[in-house]
Length: 146
Image (tube, rainbow, N blue to C red):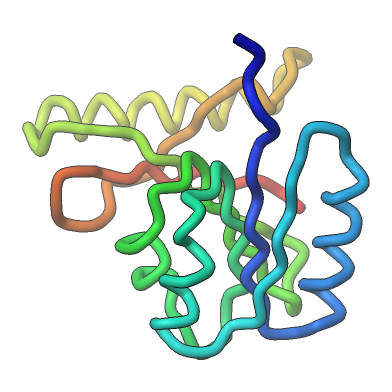
């Protein structure tokens, strides 16, 4: 069975960022992109009904990143900010809350960050920085230059 296209939702406050990024991503083969202007939590829930694979979220709007993370099941959430050249990729990485496992994730993050400056491709190194959020899932935070 051939896998379907990857679903991407771009949740934005600034139309130039959201619509422009949406058009750029939609031009990529294999991506189905939906752009949604940030508004209320109900509108966020409606945007996430299709269970997107990737969610691009513009920081600084009326909806906070924690609300997005709590509601989204997306494999990757990308946090962008129109005022910064840095974007944050929040990857869902399940961790037990055992101290040794959290410490291991931190050590992996440090090793991954150091490896990101080596000749090997940096995109392959998952670099979780810390466990975030309560509940069944734990999140690792990965920084990526944008």
